[in-house]
Picture (cartoon, rainbow, N blue to C red):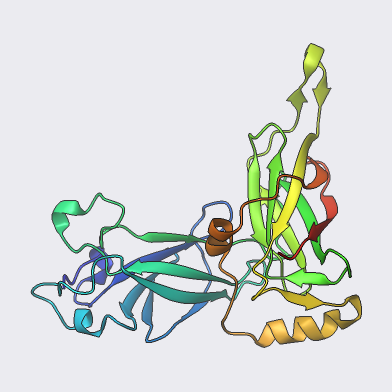
Length: 268
């Protein structure tokens, strides 16, 4: 297998390069812990991690002259649990398709070993909201009994379809959704100006992975979450498996005030 993913990976065996970014697309500046079956990584500058080993790709690790022909490229979903040390960012799981294409002639293509795999980290409940962004604080509750729902994917989308963002509810069923680059004001019908934009917030969850928490158990839920090192929710998998419900909770997006909402999750 090729020894080079980028100039700073010379003399190292590598399966892929993962680039972690925050909700605004900026490279992660602090440390993070990446774990997974058979996973071995090394941190690189600019919020990047080189994947040096992973389960099912043992033969690739020691192959320098030519990459093995099996398994097929992209056929293994390497599951990585990512826990940033900055608590303003939520932990998450990501599935990275391996092996990558090691052919330098294909280096501009999306599946190339020479292209980093970008993984977005979503806001934690303590993330500061920039003055150029709109924010919505959501509590996800199960329909019927009102318990909070952890590990739910929360989506916020403006009614005009121009703005959207998402986050994952934490151990207490709360999520902070940040909509970057949000305007200060909008021109409406007849030339009127408004500083809010109507939107809807929705929540979906995998019933096998959703954790239900009663209001009186929040302290215990936070304590468990602080000790957790893996089995985090995968927002990409949730988005692919569960379309946003047609109806949602009405919210008003604005840079001047943080919206709040209780969003109901109806278990399938």
